[in-house]
Image 1 (cartoon, one colour):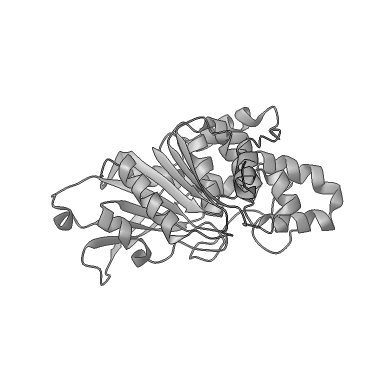
Image 2 (cartoon, helix red, strand yellow):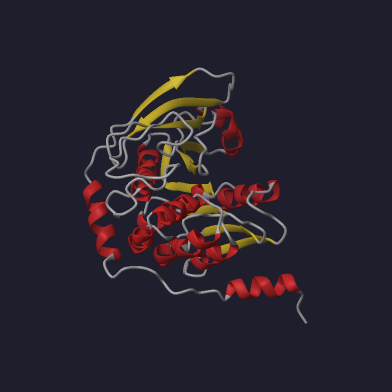
Length: 323
């Protein structure tokens, strides 16, 4: 006999909804990535003073999908504190949740103590220092998701995916970073980016996706209270665009891209999460064929617990060879 919680998890582990990918999905990403293969990152970094004696802090910009200056923190342990003259550190690339920002350097001090460098980026147009120069060819509803949503080439998700991939490339190119030990992590929107980046880039060597968004988005636009509510509101006002919106979302849906991931992945999920609903998370997770682990929390909503954060730290330490 199994209890209701066990039955729920077992049902989710078997959940494999139909893919929504269009026939040209791979061709789209092949041409998109080729477009940026030789585009300069135009990165800058400026050492800034902080009260934290064991950390070097660089105010950073780089360019992603266009010429928008994308702001980030690049943080490293100080070489003397690391016991080496010119060490190459494993590096964690951090993507924040929807409406968030790159945070403050002290928010990532635990990684410095673990022996990691960190790149924490602003997602364009949200609550950090970064704007967005994306064109807006027609109307939108409040938020950042719907400008350009009628075409995969102008979609916000295209821009932030390219931005996130190029962030990992920028981190990998820094002299303090060991390019063979670059990892990606994020929660919610950031969790979605932490899945889509290794699906499209060979730079990350492991990934942590806490309660990821950008998964099974046809289900999400219908049922969740995530940022996809903006897409739902757009379609509510313009019902004639439903198919175009769903088609655009399909190109950036981890449901359709997860099978491309070939690195170790840790994913977390709350069974009471109304935002990144467990069906959406498992739909993508069940398509991953590489080494993977799911951490499921039956009574958690849309948050990441201290215990899960600790497990993620242990996961990254293990794959960085620091344990």
